[in-house]
Length: 238
Image (cartoon, rainbow, N blue to C red; front, side, top):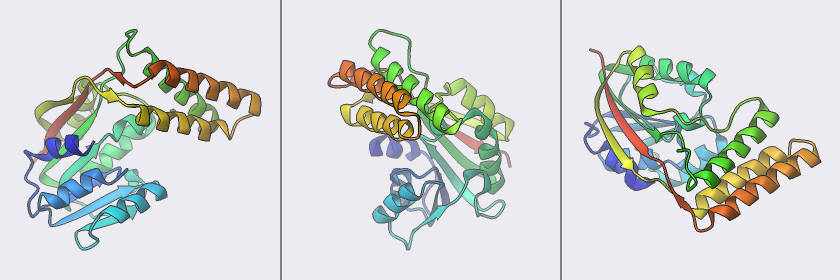
């Protein structure tokens, strides 16, 4: 996904800017922002494994990796010029989405930029069925183990309305991928997440969920190309 990150930030004023990667996973956005000339990048994640993975990839002189709740980032008010949320919102529950975007608005300077890159809901087609089934099983396992869904795909229109409510004005929309290549490696990673949640459940229930996830993965074969990844850039009101 590193190519999609670079495409998404190509038209943003990153050089000499203070940037925030909201939800550092593999650190792709932090690497891209630093390479584009950012003065300082803050990579924030509440996942210790993701934080360690990002630290392995970045120059600590340019990138600070912070393990923190995105709804309570350890950054001052009005301190960030550019915010990226790359493939973040699909792993955020509806209850948490508002507090996170309120926090992103708090740390952004007047006139700052925000870019949100994510996936439209998986289409209801026969081609997409194995991917949709796998994600449904993952959500079921996550809800049973933690009380929250693992994945929620918010359409671009909802993201635009949400950000507008926190003072962000949309400036452009771009399609990053159409269709999205759900490769065997990606699907296998989602099956592994089902296994992790299933391990917290009674054996019979957990085993049944894993079996359904593995069956969906097998039906997907060499992968499935379906759906769309969008990128929306916003400007903070002055």
